[in-house]
Amino acid sequence: ESSTGSVTSNKVRMNLTIEVTKLEFFKDSLEVRISGPNSAESAHVRMGAFHTLTLELDRQFSIEKDCWDQIFLDRIEEACNPERGAEIACVVMSGGLAHVCLVTGSVTVTKARIEVNIPKKRTGSSSHSKAITKFYDAIYRAILTYVPFDKIKCVLLGSPGFQKDDFFKYLLAESVRRDDRPFIENKGKFVLCHSSSGHKHAIEELFSDPSILSRVAETKLSKEIGVLNKFMRLLDTHPDKAYYGLLHVQKANEELAIDSLLISDELFRSSDIGTRKKYVSLVESVRERGGKVYIFSTMHVSGQQLQQVSGVAAILRYPLPDLDELEDIAVEHEAGLVEEEEEEELTEEEKKLREEARVREDMADMGF
Image (cartoon, rainbow, N blue to C red; front, side):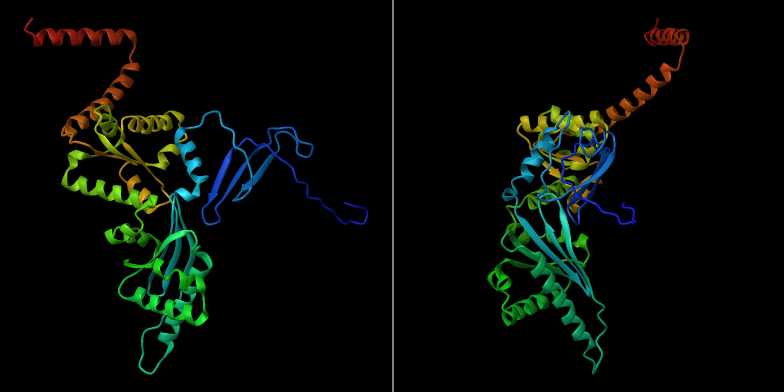
């Protein structure tokens, strides 16, 4: 600040090394915001000063950790090779509500939410048809703006009734009138399907249709939804071949019975390193024994559905009917932990008296 009160500032480009203490992810803008103290010498920032940095696409940065789980190394490698996973665009609509989303192998991103008030049909009034045209035009522009036709495999149009059909007719007619080449050249990528509403959660219904899955068979998401649907069917028809819960899945793995392991990525984000490594070792063990592993993202509806059944499940090669026995073991294990905790509170003399009482009971049972 000068003597006249004017203030000048300069921007300095530098590299900072911070120890991350807080992390926030913004899925709509695909940005990660990290905060923490500066941990390396800098000419402009003192040691220990707290800073917040924003990591975004096309910005170079390095991450250092004492221990890397193999699961995360695999996901980083997958993210660095986007050509491995195909993208899908989904448009769901109902009434005056619509969502335009991009679906990749690990996240569903809402690109546009469109809401238009559509009045009821009235004799002699054109307000209904004008509102419908305005609604369709907003969806048309959103698809043209946000859908990269050079990367996606298909565009799923879903709605209850015939609204999707009416919109597709509007899209074809308008694309010719406006000469919008992306629509004209890629009209074969549009697939019409049924959905119950225009809300985002209706996207899951689009992938439940077998005819739709055949169109997107090569995508990672369709394979995950297919194996989750198979698990749910087995849970109803052959429960001896569908296990969920860590204890049951571990037991099935010991018996070399797991054909497909379904696991939520939420389990790998546990703050407890021991818990995290337990699930990592389970995944590696299943792969070593010839099983397939499907890691579900909780940012997908399918991952949220799996999370409701403990986040870990397995489809077995052959039935293991001793499910009740495993549940008894789990109950005994929990009871054993409680008993051990109670015994720790006893004194040495009390433990000795309890042990002598047990010996006398055993001798009485044997007739001595």
